[in-house]
Amino acid sequence: MRAEALIDLSAIKHNVELLKDVSGTNLLAVVKADAYGHGLIPVAKAALSAGASYLGVALLEEAVALREAGITAPILAWLVQPGSDFAQGIELDIEIAVASLAALQEISAAAKSKKARIHLEVDTGMTRGGFLNEWDQLTTEHLNGVDVVGIFSHFARADEPAEKQNSDQLGRFSAAVAHLNSLGHVNIMRHLSNSAATLKNGAASFDMVRTGIAMYGLSPDVQTLGDSKSLGLRPAMQLRAALYLVKDVPAGSPVGYGATQSTTVDTKLGVVAMGYADGIPRIARTAGVWSAGKRTPIIGRVSMDQFVVDLGADSKARSGDWVTVFGNGSHGEYTADDWGAASQSINYEIVTRIGPRVPRIYAPHVY
Ligand SMILES: *Cc1c(COP(=O)(O)O)cnc(C)c1O
Image 1 (cartoon, rainbow, N blue to C red):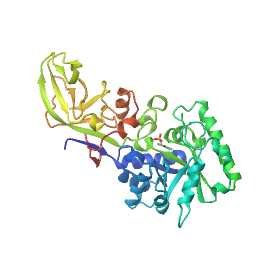
Image 2: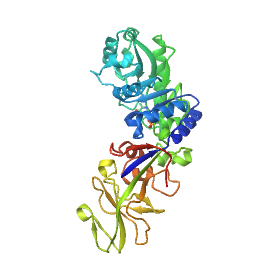
Image 3: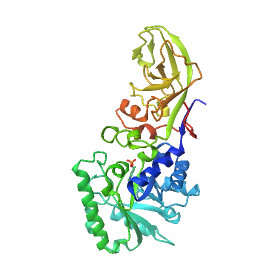
Image 4: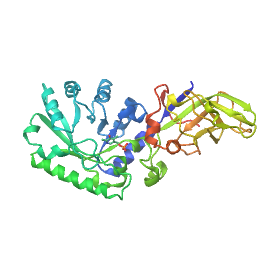
């Protein structure tokens, strides 16, 4: 094999247990985007076995894939656009987020043998999804055709716990809950927190937290909240690739497209069999791989299927060896955080963009 992502499901289980403990409430495991690149079905099953009570996805088709795999746990899909097959979703007991009166009408009309189970999404200040101006127009009548299971909102700045916007959003959320209660809906699940809020804002945990990135063992923001280790989280993904070729190269050799970098001394270069088509960011210039027990930097531009690393003249690496692109950092290797920083991005984007050509293998990490 050329490249693989090793997914340690025991790390996912550890993180779910930790997050449940921290929040002291129900946990919805966010498995959208192929479980942040870790593989939808194996992660969903691991999270449920570790005590998650709900699964959360963006798309209806992600929820349908979970049902087709035989998963019977409650599922919430929160990005279901007009014109979707709501009837199928209702039939499969998929709970659906509703963010407008029009959506409420459409989903009520789609219900046949049973009512749609919905969660009302309110915009408490992120100004993205959720009811805003229409919230005050909502009446008991609008809600007659549905089964209101929950109310939720989403934080914009939970990774900056001291920001006033967090308490503003919390206040508006409580007011929205009170409004829904006043319409006669009292027995509803309230959920607001993402990973960062789960870790740093206990007052927002309510009846359920929706954890994504932390469940995969990654910090929502290394700068403001600290890294995985300091949060007690275990990164679940190790990305590995084969050194397709190792060769000696003289000083002054230009490397890769555009000859953006040249060797400065006689050295040994390694060609890593992974490229931007596999999710290695082309912009990452300061990252590299862990090879033969040391950090080995990228040299030259990342290509579609390969990139080159400078192993150093004394390296013991050989063609066919495996290198770690990123891991949990415990051996000194680069982490998804390092790749995020090197790409002017975040660990979320690094793991979710690992391409479909990279097989996900469910096994402990290998060094
Ligand atoms: C993605 C998402 C989450 C999870 O966010 P993390 O920061 O990964 O924990 C929670 N809620 C909603 C609505 C989301 O879209």
